[in-house]
Image 1 (cartoon, rainbow, N blue to C red):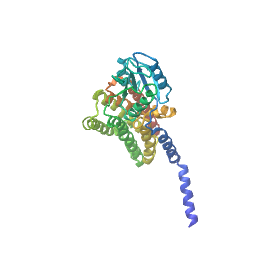
Image 2: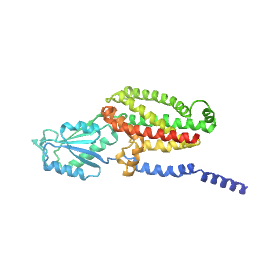
Image 3: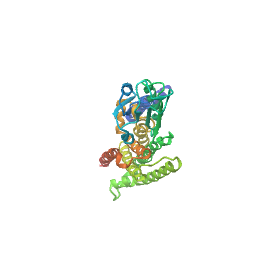
Image 4: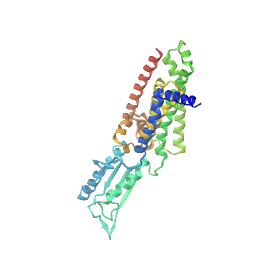
Length: 364
């Protein structure tokens, strides 16, 4: 009895050790989760770009800027004019702007009977990402108070999302995640299921070319994703009250490109997976976790170490979520996020080319 039990244990151990994909997933998942959760799950302020408007650059202004520049959580991006505030915030060049009144002086404030007659420092913060807006405001005030008098007053403006509604932040992220689930994961599992059951060979002996068969399998998922996209946009606009100032047409066009990219990613996963279980595991590791941790969906990318910031550049959802958030919340048009669109288009072409080549090589 003991001998038989030991033999079964040995057989199962050897079977697991020979399955390199399973071993990789089992050993890699705990490490990846620990590292990502340890570094990515953070709502602390980090690497926030700040610009300054100062009509008169007095000693007090220079002292405040020096304190700001020395702080590791903020990056001073230089002085700008009042007319440039809106453009810098909308394009994402800065996350906050500090406006010093013309009568701001170090340690003093123009006052009547000891009471300031108007705000001395105005903080204008991009609140489209609510994860960092409130924290950034509090941090900036604490830094500036070190170089200001007790009479100094602060006036805060939350731009783009004055009510700090969380829906403004999570709707673009949910869109980036859902389309990957519907298009990539389901497509990869569908194609692998055909191969696993042996029905793919039956389809391939038909007069239809293999590439057309693959695209035919993708079309239903693409159609379902389009319906999901329309539903999400309607819910976001009329149920959650999320603005779409940048234009529904531009949002829809960019989303269609992201859907095609997701389908290409699903095809790629199907070429490296032999079973449905492996396809699901690869999808969870390659798509789910990076999207949630490295795309800016839940936590600011700026909070990540430099290495993970570089890794996040290959996550398609990062560019899609960033563009959709700007178009929805900040009201920028599609042309203003053309760089994100070009990156997504390039990823689509590369993934689709590699996937089709690998698929054809397997057929031959």
